[in-house]
Amino acid sequence: MVLLTMIARLADGLPLAASMQEDEQLGRDIQQYQSQAKQLFRKLNEQSPKRCTLEAGSVTFHYCIENGVCYLVLCEVSFPKKLAFAYLEDLHAEFHEQHGKKVPLVSRPYAFIEFDSYIQKTKKSYIDSRARRNLGSINTELQDVQRIMVANIEEVLQRGEALSALDSKAINLSSLSKKYRSDAKYLNTRSTYAKLAAGGVFFIMLIVLTIRDFVQSEQREVALSQQLDDTAAHCKTQEQKRKFMGVLGYGPA
Image 1 (cartoon, rainbow, N blue to C red):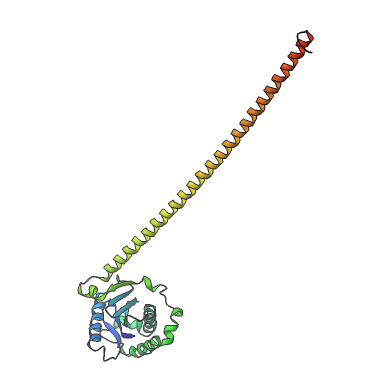
Image 2 (cartoon, helix red, strand yellow; image 1 turned 180 degrees about the vertical axis):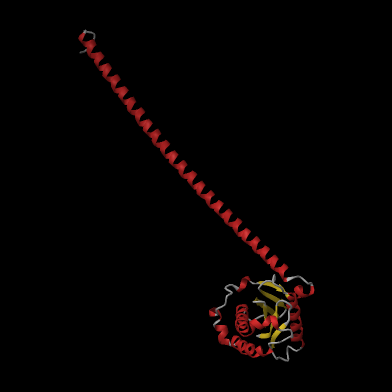
């Protein structure tokens, strides 16, 4: 469920429009959340993340910054993140069309409070169960909402940690993650090359051993053939010698 929607000027955090869910069970909490939203607006600047999710217990703030204006929605934690940002993108498109040029000129809070009627109409369409069923087909500029930075609202507001600093941490973590993936890819490549090299060495050794065995076999055959030739030549010589001795009368011819 969408509990609170607020629109503010980025330059000074001036609230421009708002819409709250009327629910007795929320009571004082919604006022507290509205106060937190106003504090958040005053902390945002041009260096802040353009899209961010801030956890606050059982509820979650989502905001996006477009054309010098911050669009914020407070939802129950069960409300789909992609649906929340699609809702904010829808509000931005209409608000910029109607009031974009007048935003820098206003000086009083909630100068565009009449925009509440469009917020209410749009909110109903996104809360409708059919919108949830069609979640996968919602067309937003944000292709991967899982990559949006997530922080805790209390840490940002009470400790005074700037969102730009959180964004820098997120960027550093992203860089470390990319480096880890790069190193892992390099190690995997080295491992693959090592396996290929080992396979190549084994194959070459197999060829060398096969050639050696073939050469040794050929050498044995040549040696055996030479031995047979020598034996045959020796036998022939002995036969000729006996015949010669027979002619001389020293033995049988």
